[in-house]
Image 1 (cartoon, rainbow, N blue to C red):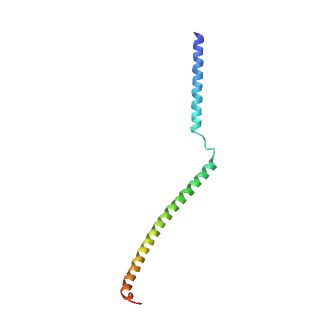
Image 2: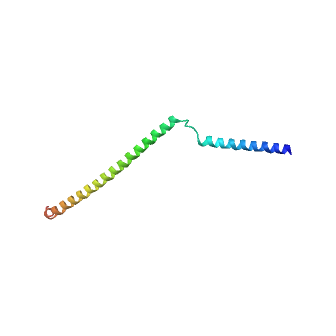
Image 3: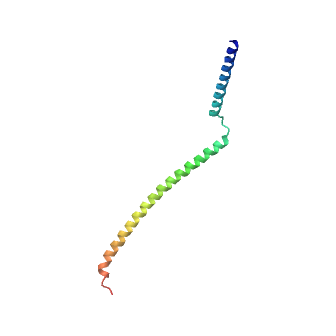
Length: 97
């Protein structure tokens, strides 16, 4: 019976050692120290550049929409002035020839 207790005791120690090793590996996996500070800085700079370009693109799209609306207004105004000029010139100029 003494051997059984000793084997059982050894089994408990090895099981606890395996549990500790697993826990330590898990902890080290999720708590990795910052090994790449330069790469993190470069990534942050690139992200800032991307956001800046994205904002500039949105502003440019707004300006393009505004310019397109102004162009449409000018086209409508031009068409109405041309058609008004044609209707006023038609009665007097039709009998020439």
